[in-house]
Image (cartoon, rainbow, N blue to C red; front, side, top):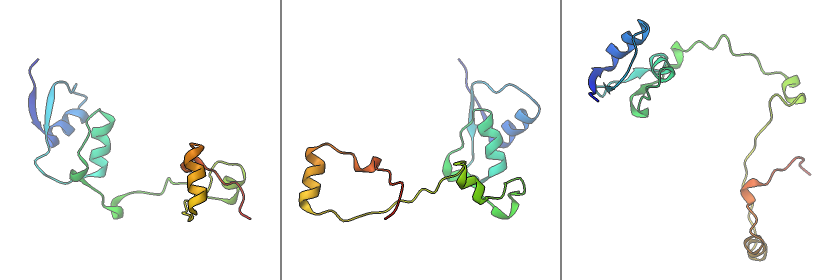
Length: 112
């Protein structure tokens, strides 16, 4: 199976023209690629290495992001996820190890 090497901008144009992308090696040419172009490439099965992705927050349209309301938390649509670290004494650490307890899976529902 023959593989063709194509410049990423050419591949982007091929996608926009609905040309099937098969057996293509993408040349990113060490260039920074705007996120909107990365998203289009990703939707078509082409993964862009992270070091080539450029995010310009000023050009990202957030207008369709819904506002977060108290109802979102009340209904469980959104939840708070808080991580913390607590010091443990040796006796408790030994017991946790002996009982094979995965403390990373602890979920605290209420704070006292």
